[in-house]
Length: 276
Image (cartoon, rainbow, N blue to C red; front, side, top):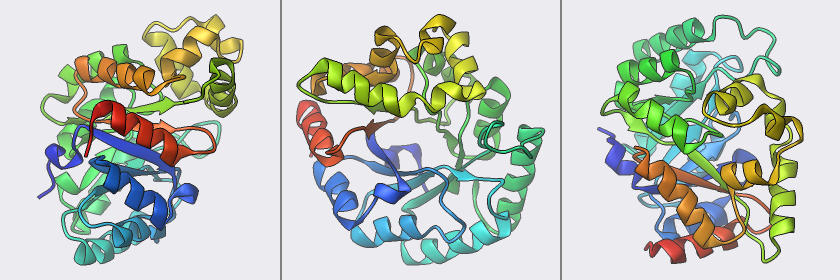
């Protein structure tokens, strides 16, 4: 059985295309409890298997498999294959994506319920699944039917709001970090990365609901907003950003290191946290 304790307090989040053997081993060596395979991995779940093959004990989770991309039965078949080889180390995170990118995204919560029902019928247990969740109803369903929730691009105020909805279920938000000796460059890296997300309504609506000024988003990301959702420019700032989510009720916080040297950034953060 997988528990929320298996994730540890801190994890590392990276797009599937950036996860190779070296990266996965570095995350484990540095003392992070979980590796999040970001983006929308295909049904074969090859990057998950690659990360598990390269490591010994770290928990691996998808963040997330898009339910509109592949059939649940195909994803479940891959899960069973991976679980047989690496029992108790993989949690399947799924989500409904974004309206702007997925025209067929209609009644997403209903679609999530149906997808989870198929996964369960195919043999996945509640503790082997989690959901990308921002809204209250999806957060509640994640606690009802899965191990918990993995909110992306949120602020600590959202974490504090989500905690009582989830009860004892896993609450595992993600935090972007942009480390550079030059804060202006760190902000530029984060702002360029966040540009696409500031065009997605589900994220911007959630940010505004929890205190972000719409003008800060419309401008492409004010310095204050960039610093809030992409902690920079030092490892100490990243630690403070993570602690704000933990103080608000998160069980686990995953760092997404932006820039050209994600392993180097994760090393700096691990040293600041005294991991390992």
